[in-house]
Length: 445
Image (cartoon, rainbow, N blue to C red; front, side, top):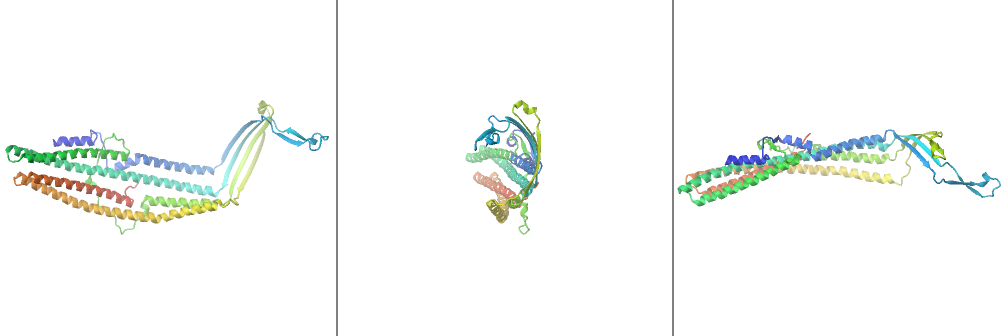
């Protein structure tokens, strides 16, 4: 009976079979999630966009070549008003002639080149784009850390439930054995029927709890696969166990802590660099802008459209060097500079708040882990004590000097101690994750 129940447990957790289940250690589960999670893939696309943005800005400094070709038909030609005396000296003073100037059809083609020689904003834009790429890469790292945290917590949850299920199977086995013995004693007249009924009720309750825990464990696997971005229909099993987890990772509070270990601090430093470049960019707007341009074109004209391609086209060319000097813009750049400097000041002021926040997180997580470990030790001691009380109660009952009620009370104490122990164990594991996160050591590439 016990073997069948354990087999059904394994089949349910492994998705009806474990023969083809893919096994994952915690590190392998995290690595898989980092490679497949949608959040991380989107962050990687942001890095690619940052690369493209750098090249886009670089392109502004390269020669810009444009071609143009146009054909024009003057449906209603514009007239110009000129004095009539130009053509007829005897014309009255003030008399004007509305003369047509131009041809009905014209053609124009040209190739133009523009080359930026100097622009302070362009040079700073190149620097800002590189810093923006750095920020996107740090955002990618932050996404990886968040995914690693979620996978780790889900993985630990399965390990705890698996351990709990093992003890619950032992409880059921022990109680079933006692129920079998009590039924035999009842048939022989050495035990009352109510003793059998009490044990049956307890046995049924444990089996119901077992089925509930099975469903919770199945949900735990689904959560882990979701956090890993693994298809939910995939079969997986875990390589690691709770014995391999080191909970003794309390940090040395007296040792200096490098805030750069926290990705949030590193990202704020990058944001500070961007804000500084924004201030410089606005000030660079006061510098002259130098642009070289060249143009070569050809044009022709004819009254008949077909003649445009038979008549000669006349070429023209021009070179120019333009220096654009900002003189007065209504104080626009002045107020933009004020806003930019204020934004930089806000970023710099955020460092103290972030440092205090990190210190608080490290302190809280360290204390939480200490408390969780202390609670775990106490609950483990209580569980061992409850096991001993249950063992003595069963011996007394078999020897006829104890009651079934005493045995049931001892079993209830074991169950309560087990629940408290596994709650403390899970809290300790989560506190460990939170402390590693606070110290910036949870996930390193």
